[in-house]
Amino acid sequence: MTLSKRAALGRIAAFIASILLVHLGTASSGSAQPSQGSASGEGSRSVIDQSHLSPEATYAASQAHPFGRVHPGAPPEVQEFAFLIGEHECRERLRLESGSWLEFRALWRGRYVLGGFAIQDEYYTAQVFATNLRIFDPLQKKWIVTFSRMPGFAQSHWRGEREGEKIVMRRVDSDFEGPTFSQISRTGFEWNSGGRDPNWYSSCRRKNVVER
View 1 (cartoon, one colour):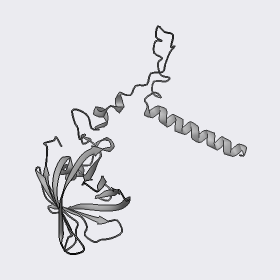
View 2 (cartoon, rainbow, N blue to C red):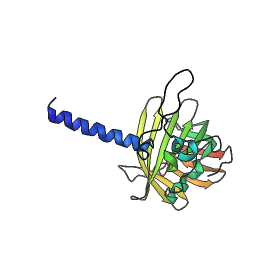
View 3 (cartoon, rainbow, N blue to C red):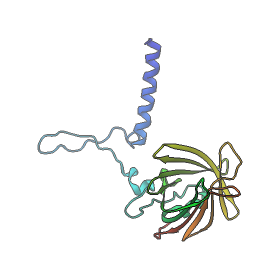
C-alpha cells in the first residue's frame, strides 16, 4: 500500500471515529468522565451517556408503548398507515390455479420503527412469514415500501399513495394497480392483491386497542 493510500485511509478512519463519538454523546463534553473504581481494584472505566438510546427517547417499542410511537417531527402522512399499528386477525381467501379458493387465517402486526418515522408490519400464516418496511417520501409524496418474504426468500419494491378512501400500491417499475387497502377504520381493514380481478383477499379485524 502506498503512503498516500495509507494517509487517505487514516483520514477516513478518523472521520468515522468522530461521527461515532458525536453519536454516542461524548464529543460535546470532551472525554468521558471516569467512574470510581470498585473496592476490588477494577480501576476506572469510561461511562457513556446512553439515555438518548432508550426506547422512550427513540420512540421504539417499550413496555409503555409496545408498538412504538410516531415521532412528532414525522411527515403527517405517516398517519395514513397508522391503522396497521397493533395486531389484526385476518381471514384470507386465495384463488388457486384450479380456480377454487383456499381459505386460511393470518396475523398482521404493525409497529413504528426508525425513530417513529416509519412503519414496519409483519404478516404470519402457518407457512409464510412476510414483512414490509413503509417509509413516506415527502419529496415524491409517495410511500416507498420494501417487501420481504420467507421461507423461499423473495423481495420486491413498491410505491403507493392514498387515492380517495383507498391506499394503492404499485411496483416501482410499473403503473399497474397492485395491493390495495380499503374500508380502513379503527377496527380493521380490507386488503386485496390488486387489479380488476384480485386473486387474494384479506379481511382483518383489530385484536387490541393501541395509541396511534
